[in-house]
Length: 489
Image (tube, rainbow, N blue to C red):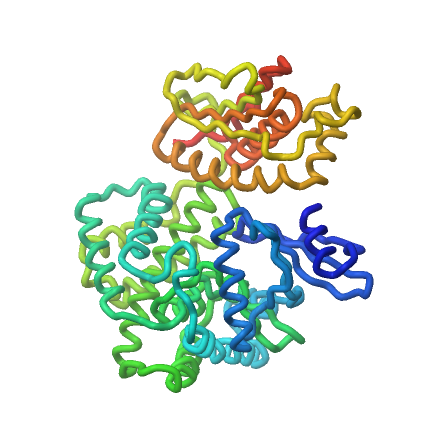
């Protein structure tokens, strides 16, 4: 936070008079609205991945140079971990469509016009935006290929399908995955694939003008993917007649930019990408819902299953007979999918996480479980409150030290990366039935930064996963057990 204020001061020549943290959806980035003395606002972003930030900054500058409707980059920190961009307001297309969505898909004429304006803007963004774009700057890779498809299909398999306890032959399933991957990548595309084109990522200026955000995962790829992402978003509940209207509008708007296939072929290819995108979405819902226990994603699963059922009935998966059979079983059983709600406690063999703080002067904590699993993080790169007299007799559990570290902000950026790594690792350990994992944080004296980091990671893990977490502040002689509230398996 403090470093974001400093970046603002360097850009504006004065510190902001107010900073408001903005809600976070599925992203690990933190967003803030910074208000100047003149009342004008900008949005500050604190990221957890330099490569991802770099991709967004490059793409935003490229799109702005082409006068496309995206935020402009105003200032960037030297390490690219923080940046300022123009404030596009607080109303997204998702917000503007709330009434139609909540009515079960009865969209008013005004809402339909917003959708039409947005879908007609997309081809310009995809094709004009690709002009002169250096795709090597994209993150995590420059183009949609078989590796992308394989990653998303396995995401579905491991994070959703396996969580349902439906039996399947992995070799036969992988064979169909390879066939689907070949079909999806059989044509080369030169446009920019947004990859996460959805109503939440479209901001409306003056209530009507669409601006595109959160395109940092984009790359060279098929335009079908974005159309499928947008029109088959599970929670949108677009009726088939409206979908057809929007597809027609997109087709007409795209024709000046590229040689589109005949309409029958276009519709066939689109349905194939809708099928693929649905599997990818279910994988995301499984990870965010079953493993991260986020209710919004759990609530979205039934609508995605309905989309899948519709596609199976249309025969979209008929070329992949074993996959089609497994998905048919999945749809039939979706009302009995395992719930991430807490189960009865007392089962043995559950994952226990131990989190240590320590001083490097006294060595890294030993692994009592003998499995050798876990991480050791060095906190000494962050600002040390122990250098200042008021904090020398306090620890990272004391409020003055907590305020010092959080106002400085370095420790928060450091922990954001740790949280991301820990969350992914724990989710996989839970899935695979492992029982022990260890995190250790070291600093000079094992008193301030390491204690703060260990305590906050432990509480983060316990809050998110509900598993038992044992905290050991070794140099302070403090031990604490956060009891499990959830049993997995």
